[in-house]
Length: 90
Image 1: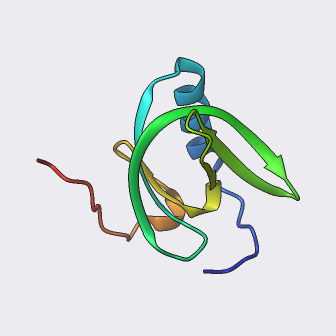
Image 2 (image 1 turned 60 degrees about the vertical axis):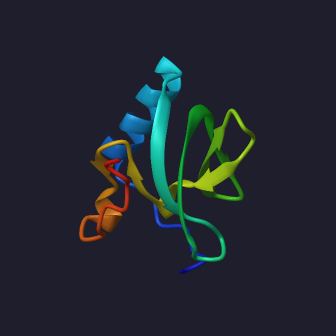
Image 3 (image 1 turned 90 degrees about the horizontal axis):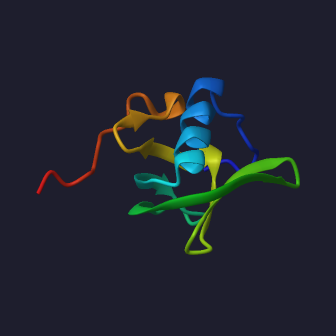
């Protein structure tokens, strides 16, 4: 995975902002810094920029680069439109 930040779609950013404002728990699929697929959930505490890279911080303290997000709830990130959904329908 490229270390260069790829800005995310503005509409997708709006989805993240809405979830943060509503303080609702979201299901997440994303790549960590080791390029491992991660599935989780949490409440978005804030969105912020560090060294020209956009991140989200969850209430748990975990930070996720926005260009590593694959999916939030049922919303696919535009940069990963062809990526399969690994959420569990259990």
